[in-house]
Length: 103
Image (cartoon, rainbow, N blue to C red; front, side, top):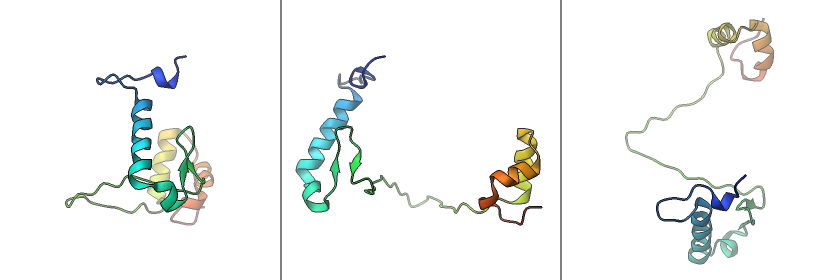
């Protein structure tokens, strides 16, 4: 198995890992993140402490957002049919996410 560093070499000749290393180094020097937040990156680029959270958020004026709601009975019945399972078994597996009282 090839190492992570030799995989997926892009057109510019750098691997994705090298790109990540470059980005992490720039982020450290430009933002002084460790000093400002107390968060660091481990050798494998995981955030430390583990409770640290980051993300990339993209927005667009025409974007539509939606909420994920509880599962309805017709959805459970359809899923059970497609999986060849009994409705009661699907209800048992999804009990915490049901929008109705299971039979």
